[in-house]
Length: 223
Picture 1 (cartoon, rainbow, N blue to C red):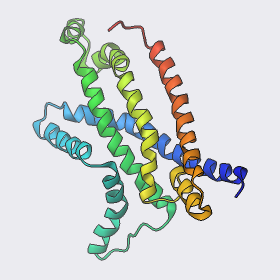
Picture 2: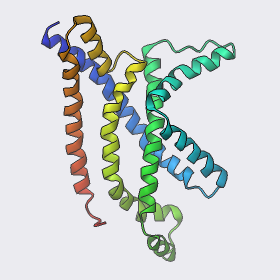
Picture 3: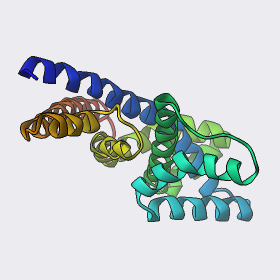
Picture 4: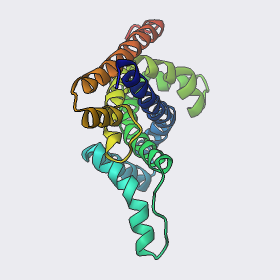
């Protein structure tokens, strides 16, 4: 294969990597906030179950979770006498996105929780004195400060997500890392695997610049 052909193959794989990244980020950000609310709930059973779930997800490898979500439905349905095997690449890709979304939502929830708890209690009391409801207090007083405080740790998680997409190779054959591995095995050459690393590096560089600009724009609170 020529350099151009390899570049096109890797570009196709990178599109699937971007798909995993985009779906995970879009779904995990709001889901993480919901999980955060669950862990902070005053209903004891809700907070206990939510925290236990977060503990399990954060305490087990992402690769194991990908395999569980990919193979789990088929194994459960088989034990019930139902044929629900995941066969197509798109079905595998869907399960990968589910696993990534749940994993990163749990990490994001802890970042949200830390950001919310870092806002001084006096601001909640002041909002209460002004007659604001809990939802008004959160979205009009607390939320923007939380965003400012969590942007740095969120940036680290987002950049880590780009690199973690390579773990999808355990169940799918479409992502950038798997395509690079296939080329290496087929052509018996090593450099495409390092070439794939350039794609990750350039994308992470772009994200670092964009997230850095976002952090500067949110520099309205000196905290």
